Image (cartoon, rainbow, N blue to C red; front, side, top):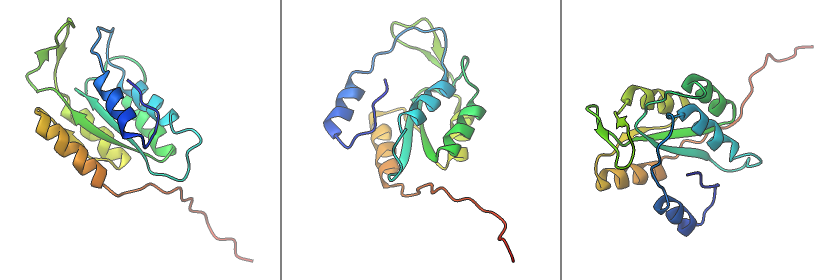
Length: 150
């Protein structure tokens, strides 16, 4: 589910409530990050933040390293919330085992200026959201160059 940037809390709640788990040929976390970054096209004056909720396993699509680079080039911070366990488990209605890949989640958040969370309960998810909302780091475009001395 992709929700365009908005300050309409009801729209965001509705988007979250409409999330449906579907069978797929794999998980493309890199693609998800790039799609999220592209949603910010034309937005310059506000903090750009993606909250990525996943088990962290990426087995198809764009490499995570390439997506991290793209997020940084576009001044986007990515926070990650892991929603699986290291032991894994089956998802209802999906013929797949979901195992937590905490290293990938930390790689994404650490390299884009975000934070990484693990949420195995509703309260842990709420706590993660609260901390993300209070997180105040903002990426600012800044280019260094050698001064021209005449």
